[in-house]
Amino acid sequence: MDIISHTPDLIIHYLINFLGINDIARLAAVSNFFHSKCIEYFSSLCLQYNLPSVSPIADFGKIYTQRCLIWESWSLEERKLQYLPYNLVKSIKLASDFTCVLKYNGKLYSNIAGGEIEEVSDGVKEVDACMLGMIYKKQNGTVSWWRVNAGNVLKTDWQGEEPNVIAASVYGIIGLKSGKVIAFDHNYTREVNFASGNSHPISQIKATPKMLLILNEAGQLFSCGLITFEAILITTGAFRYLALGNTHSLALMQKSVTPVGQWSTETLLKFMSSNGFEDCCQLIKNHEIDGTDLEDINEKYFIETLGIREPERRCKLKFLLKQTNTQKYEKDFEILGWGRNNFMQLGPEGIMINNPSIITKAVIQDNDKIESLTCDKMYSYICTSNGKILALGGKNAVKMTKAEKKNFLWEDVSEKILEKGRVVEIEGSNKRLGVIYREENKKKIKVKMRMSEDILKLINNGSLPVEAYEIGYLDRFLGMLEISLKDFNKTDIPKHRIQYFKRNGKIVWDRRSRLDCF
Image 1 (cartoon, rainbow, N blue to C red):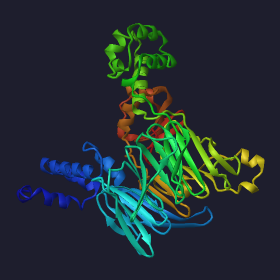
Image 2: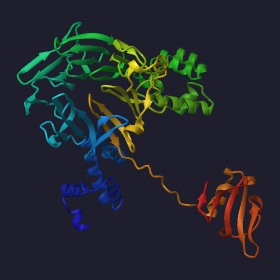
Image 3: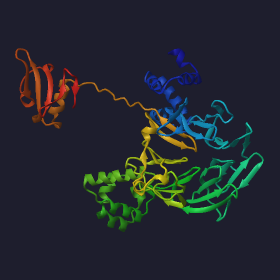
Image 4: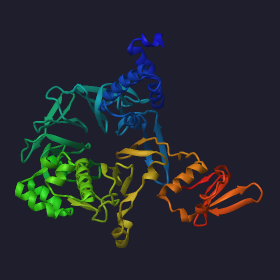
């Protein structure tokens, strides 16, 4: 131990690097010295993988087990899967003839130059790929565009203002905080012209070889062709996610939730009246109470200021306020879709939808939320935080009857896409589908069978009705006998003679078969 305590920290961190998460946790429990070194190592991991330094080991474990696979043929009848040998996968991008995989440690892997997938760069923050090119942004803000030309890879670095958005098309595409969108390539630069003007920062760009979808922070959504480079305003709204494929486009409209601390008096009045606290509204109005007064959830404030005396009502209000603060977006949402609808990828509408229109709404559980949208040639996809994948499309619209179209809804294809594990994100392209998934141990943990003394304590402490139970015990002379629990408590029969417990005539604990249903 003395030798280890004098070993330089870098060497200890290097040795810990070969351990798994469970091994690190066990090592930290050996001594205070190892605990401090493991904490230092784990903090450096969190910083390296863009996690807060206070993240628990479980957070690192989640991203550590993230892997990826590719559906070479996305068909329920014909499965062609390619599992890639990477963990810590942050994103996957699919181009026509190559693949890009970005890990949380900033390492970027690709086969853009042909052959096998290999590491092409490090320190990368985000990446995008399309057709014959890829673009990536590093942690230091530099942006590089790689394009395949006659078997060679041309590399061009962006020179100018640091972009906050990148996208890949036949050119490298960047969006700036000044509101400009610029396409660049080797010895070529062209700026997108906004017909109605734009001075708001660019928040999202989605690209195909033919067009761009551009969203600014004001909620204005533009469409831009890559021949004229004219951006036309098509709609405005509270957009959260965009998806653009070769046949159709999607946009998720979902309003963000204002934190409690930023509520006005009017917003607070509406919240209180809609949740059964109408008796507090007049007081709130008279004293002009707003969200800043409720930001620090205080039991004393609820009683003395708001006059809420009932404990259950105070608990309800605390729960609602905490729930509101944890929500980033409202539950209500709408999905807009436009483009070709020949495979029902936009629901039971026409074969062609020219303008953004509300499409068939997907059913999302209350404890779930939408994490991303994507689309390929035949499908629209929704990925949720619980790992659900909902798909719309895949049917020939011409051959479907009106009745079939009317009942055509989103389908849960989670188990079809991934047989085991949990889907984190999917990435669609014209020919392939990329899936980032998390390996999870779904084995049930076997619970140790409790002793008869433990069962007696559980029943006799008042949490279970004594009258409903009978006990089977082994008598030294008469063999197996049965007695009510109430009468058993009056005897001095040794506890180790108990063989089973019955509840309402049904055995719920049995020593011989090791049954424990309590």
